[in-house]
Length: 236
Image: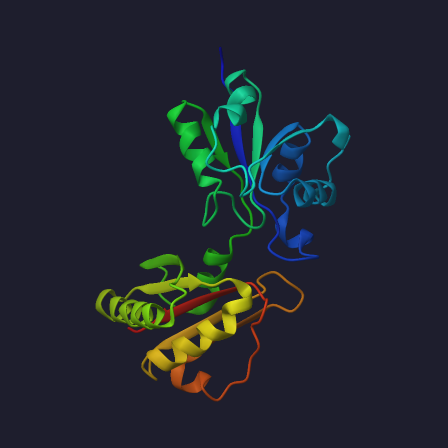
């Protein structure tokens, strides 16, 4: 039996960012698909409505892949795909599979010989890199740094050394309510000449993206509390 296709459907990064996020192909795709695997059903339905879904939502089959469902068998998520039905995979924000638990679904799809089609859409790491002015030839995304202050300081110094050694941009992030603490730790543990880019609320109405040396940042006053932020450092 022919298998369905798994479409990876990006979701806006911020409120009121619909016009920056949707492509005609995305809109056409969601109006063909009736089965989805999502992180949060409520926000997924909201996204589909804002994106221009014409199919009555009562006709949709939505599989919840939220944090309380992970670790269980993946078989139920693939019933439709293995039966030849196309399915959409959606993250809570941005691109599914990138710093996102949806990667587990994508990996399983490849194991099962299911075609995977990524759609164009917003990605905070790539957009932060684009706007930083740092090397786009060599870069690494590290996700979340250690919560422990001592371990985090050690890791920040390691990333700075890696950047200098490899001429490589280092990207990382934090849970939004700990952003200010991470910002302070970067300033404390990096050389004054190291460049730091703060990319905050990407695509949002109050988007803030700025690159300065660590030394210059020490005289800046910013509040990143509860604002989705990507941190980038570069020491060329």
